[in-house]
Amino acid sequence: MTQPLSRAELLALPPVINLATLGRALGLSEPVVRERARRDEFATLGIRVLQLGAQYRVPTADVLRFLGIEVPEPKRRRAKSYARDEDLEAS
Image (tube, rainbow, N blue to C red; front, side, top):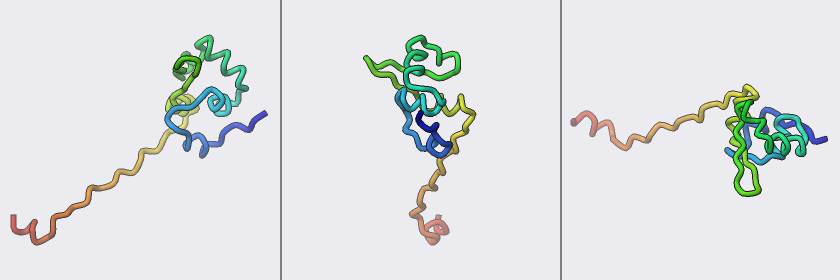
């Protein structure tokens, strides 16, 4: 059996994952995850499973929310100020 994902691995996931990765995140086998996705059982857990043709995709944010992992807010960069002190004093 595949090792479940660590917290660091979960936080490094892309915005949307496949069912195999969902299985690793939840500690479930891929066949079990596929069957539950087909039955729409993840919706009751707050995990949306999007079917795109024959493929399934899952928003990572839903999985993290279900697991109780808060995603840290990205640090916002301050806009560079191009005004010089002399320009500010003159106004």
